Image 1 (cartoon, one colour):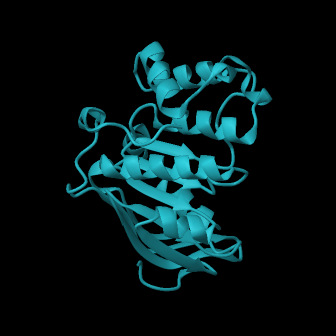
Image 2: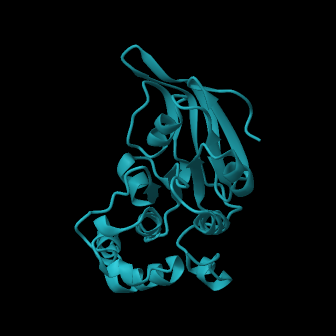
Image 3: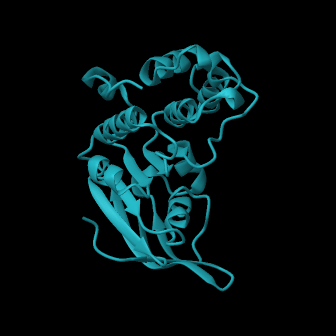
Length: 232
């Protein structure tokens, strides 16, 4: 993956500048699964132009928080606001980019086909979208092979390209550094900075405290479903 895009590319992005009032937030949100309380009265806000890192031990509610932000899960109680990004789940999903444990790519399609499919689903011309992704994420000849044949690093590059193909205004990533080498982690950090710089809301779940410190602007700590301290 190459380093952040040029200023001209940023100006062409279909998102507001970092200074605009774009933010998403939870207010007094609780989520229960039967007797298990995954989130308890969580109030937190994520602002465009910043890379927000959500940290905490296993079972602290991080993935549930991300799922609620991404409209995949509804809270049991409390309020979720996506502000200018949309009032309905359908509206929010049109501007959402998601990179999770599951790549959301089709194993028997090539990297090219996965990216072009995502582009078409967002109403974009497939070939130019892939060529832009190829240049940004250094997708070599492996992009013409089935996705199932890829290494972890190759899978991550294609997953990021798929998630970013429509220039999302809300980018959510769940443990994106898992299995990546140092060079790939540095490249990922550059991508996150670039996305925040163009005005996206960027929220990352990670166990990697070093990565959180190096790549994040804001740190939100969760433990047993509760915010353990103010965002730093």
